[in-house]
Image (tube, rainbow, N blue to C red):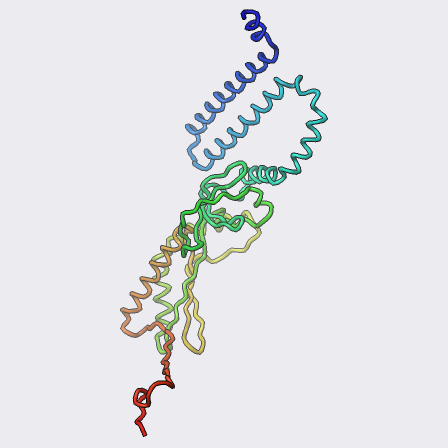
Length: 304
């Protein structure tokens, strides 16, 4: 019994196993200390998140390197077999490999970051986590009208960043242009209507213009793009039925629905206070239904 225990303790394979366990424990401890220090000294949430993800990836990589180094003499005779198997695995796991490459592209480029509102792989929502293989999105829209959460958490493969366009609603320019159209009846004071709508829009969403202008100036410096108007704009068109006023404005991408509600409520309230000087146009139809089975008296005709 004693001889077998001593033989087990001095077995080279067991020595390598113990060395591998110690290496893994040391790497895990070091990575946790680095993650803790990163969380303590890095204040910006997005940078801290990316650093922690990168440290975790480095930890996995170091564990693999340590195991390969410790057991390298045991793997020498398997080089040819591993080469052939690797080619087959690479073909079978090409989607996984592409997703990992997509993760590197997301982390080290400006595709998107956690907190951004994106549309990727046919899914629209806010990014809540970026994994090595998949990006987790809190979905908006679908059966819910407007840019509101519907409750579904969707995981999209990172490989989609190479396959489809990535729509980022809050990247370098975290604002959106939105529009409201109002039909105004002919006979209304259209000049006064134009001034009133513009005044209300500036009052309610004009504060966004200053922030949006700074962001847009950064876009102009970074990309080959012309300068754009971020101040509220009111334009008018006319047809045979009514005059249509289009109110265009810049809004924070997360407040689009609430801002539109505030503007509509204020527009209708102020128009009502004009006592008919401005009137909302609408279509009304008079339909006279004739039932041939009804009696003449029912249709309003005297009996003969």
